[in-house]
Image 1 (cartoon, rainbow, N blue to C red):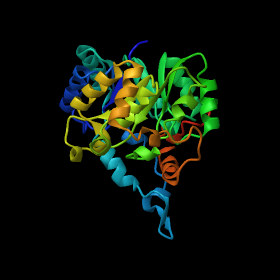
Image 2 (image 1 turned 120 degrees about the vertical axis):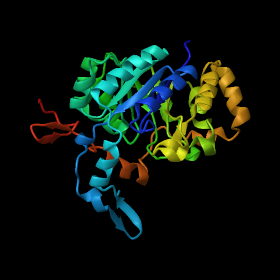
Image 3 (image 1 turned 90 degrees about the horizontal axis):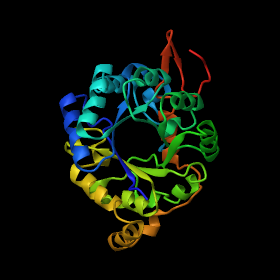
Image 4 (image 1 turned 90 degrees about the vertical axis):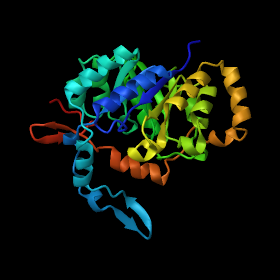
Length: 318
């Protein structure tokens, strides 16, 4: 059995700086990553949905997340990578000896980068049910990783039908940032095996508080890959810093992943005696926090065609 795949997710931790990104690529490669991933975020594809400008709160409970459009677009604009940057990223990954990967957030974004040399494509959990996007990605890439957090079970089943015959890995994740160990619901890994023999885990836990327990337990339970946000900067220097692992943590995770499954579980039992608290439920309703995040992030980006936004789930030719 081959060792599990480790994905180092650069996310927004490069701060739009190519030199930082270069250092991230090489640090990830040197410490055991199989893939280094960026996100094909385009600030110009951010959609303005007025209800999120002020948010909604009733009786002290948040009903709609507050995320003002103008401020968010200005923040994302500083992180935009050009197509030249992305082409450079792919080749820098080759130079470092690691596979280049990206997340496509829109169909137009996927079309822009499909010929740049990315070896795999990631689908964010909020697009697991965006079937037109999935079908288009399967035309361009032979290897796909699809997150399933904040996605309903019937939507995952339908996504599996759309991707039937492809090399797809479904990733369990919980869209709470950061995710407490008691909310991991790692039994979902077994549940997802009905849809694909390759099932992994995208970890949003906070390593400074929980170390690598969540990722290690997922590997001990047979996850075929683990995705972790990755940083070379201090936590407070990037938005995703608190849920990101450092190069030394990545190296520790690589060493653990290379153990036999039996040795992984023995190690977990010693390091994390209460590990069963993280198993949770194989099927469950989404929590309030997950529903709030689904509401905001699903439709956050859309393809811009002839001045109109087309959402990823809309079965429209353009």
